[in-house]
Length: 229
Image 1 (cartoon, one colour):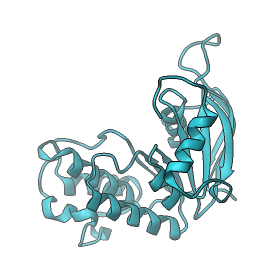
Image 2 (cartoon, rainbow, N blue to C red; image 1 turned 90 degrees about the vertical axis):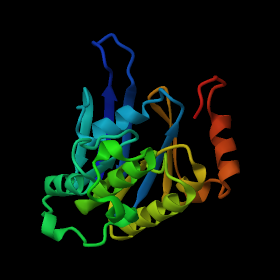
Image 3 (tube, rainbow, N blue to C red; image 1 turned 90 degrees about the horizontal axis):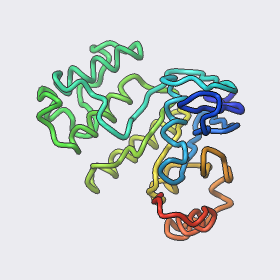
Image 4 (cartoon, one colour; image 1 turned 30 degrees about the vertical axis):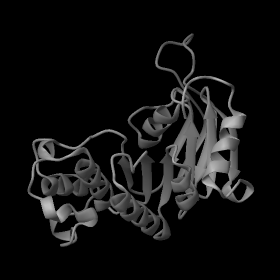
């Protein structure tokens, strides 16, 4: 059974006559699989993540989840008045993991500033804490929204290695972003969204294996508009 499955989901932020942000979208992600979701700003990617995470409910269709879910948001969702270590304990507890069960060596170098409050950390350090918090609950479903933004090359590579470990452990993953080198490294299939609808959903084995060529293909399939990917 898929770890996460959405069937014919639709959503709009207004009333019945409002333009749908997502329309009749279906997807499923099985254990040990990663689905990339790409599209322009406003194509419905963030709304899809919110629906899959459960913070929004579809107005049509259904979503099924099987297993513990964690989310690495694009922005900072950490508790800024708490330390990095206290945030880790808090988010681990949400997934049923006690503070004593946390590893003594924290991932992504977070241990070196574990007692510093979040508000005092740089954007890159906050992102590293955010990733560590998402992984602390040992997720079986992992949602990633541009997870390596704000990271330098070194920590980006370390984060990708961690995500691959989580995937190899059997977690179902969804990656939203526009870094095609990350997509080719992490993902198995790609969903292209435009105007809240799926333009295609394909295996990466059917698509170019060069980041530049893959990006060019995606751009060629989108209507000509100024909005960036």
